[in-house]
Length: 217
Image 1 (cartoon, rainbow, N blue to C red):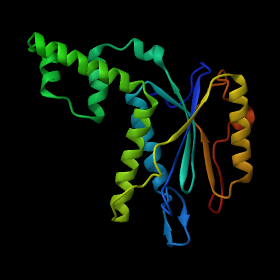
Image 2 (image 1 turned 135 degrees about the vertical axis):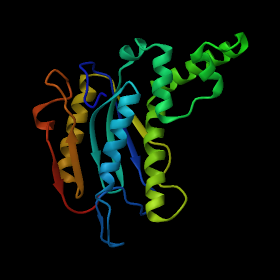
Image 3 (image 1 turned 180 degrees about the vertical axis):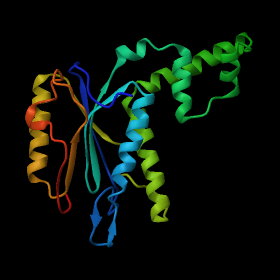
Image 4 (image 1 turned 30 degrees about the horizontal axis):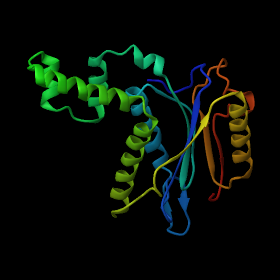
């Protein structure tokens, strides 16, 4: 599991926002309900996804109606994985067709072998794709929230938003963003996740273990 950030500078800042008055975390005074436990849903799912995808969570912020993630795709680590490891990782989250199971056992005929290897290549592509990481996170959270709220329909506004942090200037901007977010939002919980000192993202003013104020952003 990688729940931290590597020394490589490339990052992606991702944001997902709830639809209408749906709450992700905190106390909803209008409805009189406390959703604080949902933050743990986010953390647990991120931990699981980080154990499957070669994607590192450098930082996150869970807020009342949306969340922020700073992600890094460790493509170098993924290149070392065998096809069997990609299958093992993918099937933690999704089922494997019988054809792939026969491929693993060495029982597939030639046509099945080619089809099975095509499926594995598709899984390989998806496991290094931030869009699939976010899809696996958001669909899981939406299902749990809808079950708890006893409703159906969309929980998120739409597809997540993403901005690449490609260089030191972008990382410095991200530091300014985090500082401004901490100072000016009225409902905010932020945690840095084990950033080593060598990581460009681990500026001292950004390594807060936990910060909370009240209200809604």
